[in-house]
Length: 182
Image (cartoon, rainbow, N blue to C red; front, side, top):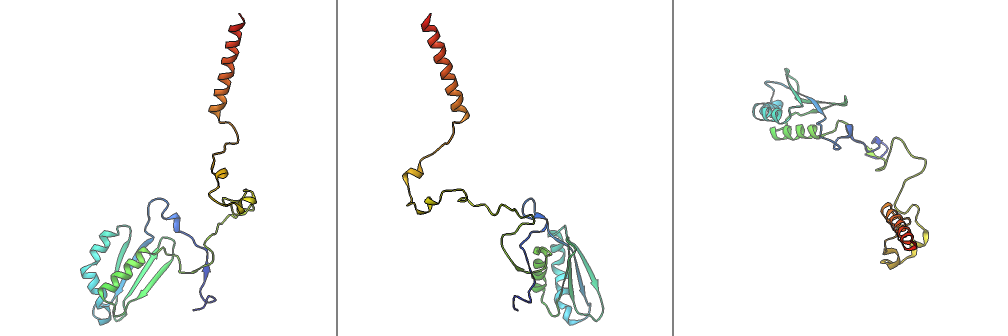
């Protein structure tokens, strides 16, 4: 596929997932299968052996079983954001069905798209992007590091503690001078 055929979008996260606790985005899974057709054998084996464990491990996901006659097996998934996804799984093995269910469980529900930029905001700033060297003098670009004069700690103003110490020292000197006069 070329880039013209793949839809593009900005990088985003669903519901700020990963900032707080993780919320599984898979809301509902429907396994549609035929009770007698050979193409549904892997889905039936998965249902008989591993479905109960999958449901116990994922209590936030509802699992539906829908038997239907003379139709191919389908896994249908619905996500919290309203998107739906489905997979036609004719002649899949039990392990393949389990792997696809794990893939759908870990998916965000957003469509797979080409990422335009890795840096994006919905409310852009007119000030531009900040970086650590934004207000630094340009002569630092030519400095050879490590530079001893740039390595020293520089405090442009006195801290509040230093100001209080100076005021206390000045008052103490005033009192000492007054006592000497008497």
